[in-house]
Length: 292
Figure: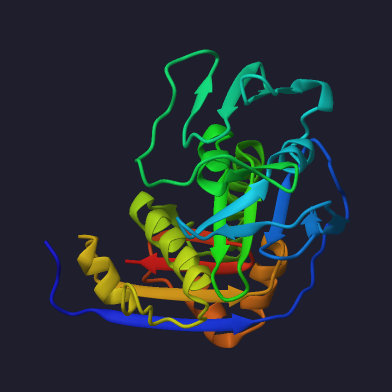
């Protein structure tokens, strides 16, 4: 049962680091940014000029992107991009899968299967100025991409599934390393190690992702409220709870050092009443939650 008395201890820390990536068309990373009306794309941090620019299809208000360029920057060899002008089809082979698009059609096939169908009013593959353009949604689904859309700048960011998995694996390693380093600090003052709590891991990740998504840095979330309310809403039992947050630290070592150099954050890490910990990271936004 939950006890009535609850204590909330929240502290935050901010640092500034600049990171960049200059590799282009590397197999291990595929992050592509395209802007409507702009021939300059950004691939893994480097600008690349296209022959045509993405546009908005007026009838459906959908973003259309050049298919050949997108395929090439995803690491697909030009020999694996086959146009059949008589059938008005485009076959693209990637990772032993053959994806087939149809001009004038809003679906696609994979390995000859029944076509993936969308609604009658959905955007279709079309040819404009001699180039084939594909609706963003089809590219996303056909190649299992993650899409981020910035409506203010009309910019779309695409990440392939391999890159997403690598980023998630790296985040997990960083989260686990933070916990190890925190327990090292506790051992120095003869405190027992904090135990990993799966609920706190989940909530910390949600909080970090929420800060990144909604562009804020605070203990009070516009989505989840304060830490106590968030824990209660997710049915997490606790007597005392706390949170450290941080922004701008690229490594686990640096963020823990930052917290330990701040008296209020250090007090949370070395609080003898805390028994459990969870850590979540999204980008360079960190959330560290405790409970006892």
